[in-house]
Amino acid sequence: MNERPGDVLISIIIATYNAGQHLRECLQSVKEQTVKGMEVVIVDGGSTDNTLSIVQESGLELVKWVSEPDKGIYDALNKGIGMASGNWLYFLGSDDRLLPGFSELSSYLRDDHTIYYGNSTGFNTNGPVEYPLLQGSFSEYRLAKYCMNHQSIIYPKSVFRKYSYDLQYKVLADYALNLLVWGDRSFKKQHYPITIVLYNMSGFSSDNKDRQFLKDKLQLIRRGMGWWMYVRMLMKRYKKKLLREEDLWAP
Image (cartoon, rainbow, N blue to C red; front, side, top):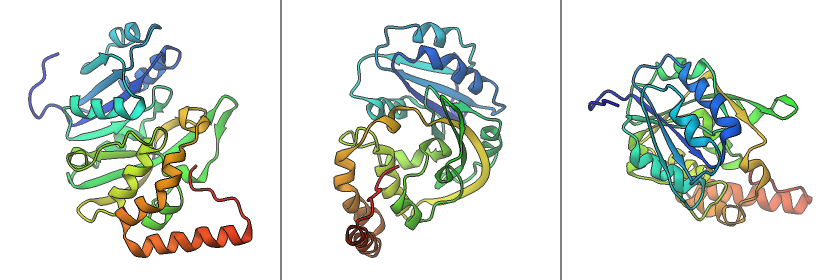
């Protein structure tokens, strides 16, 4: 792989572990994109299946990979950030599929202090899933209430000179990061109503709870978005408790 500075516009980072049953289709969806200057960074946790042979046979023009034990998905993503050459970073699940809209959204990348994001469409083993939180723009208030889909976001690399995924959050470190970044006035946020990814809703986060994140969420809101949003969400939690409503702090 011959690579010169400035060649890579966007790095697609994929964390994998024994993902061979999904990875081939995932990489094919990447290969079908029309983005110029796109690299794929695969951080594998030491798979024992056919993952690495699929990577080697993918035919991708620019691909980097490493295979070694890690501390989980977000440790792998942090490693991928360090390996990435692109000015923009995108995180794709090995069981997700990029859609043509990804290339369209990538054509709007301009400002290296703006986070660009689109829409997602969901699926599971039974077929397509309609889920409203995969669509639309996110204000600070909407994000404080609900997690947005990580796979809908293209980050400028400048975000990760300031932030990284916190490994104490095993399932929702991306949500924790977004709560901080959305309140950071040094980064603009720009939504385009373009569907960019087919997101597998039967994945890791759907089957696991992140108790540490749930414990810390209010404080993350305070740190990222300030006292007003913290008090607003605290009162919302108190009202739900009085009404004995289920407190849905995570997706």
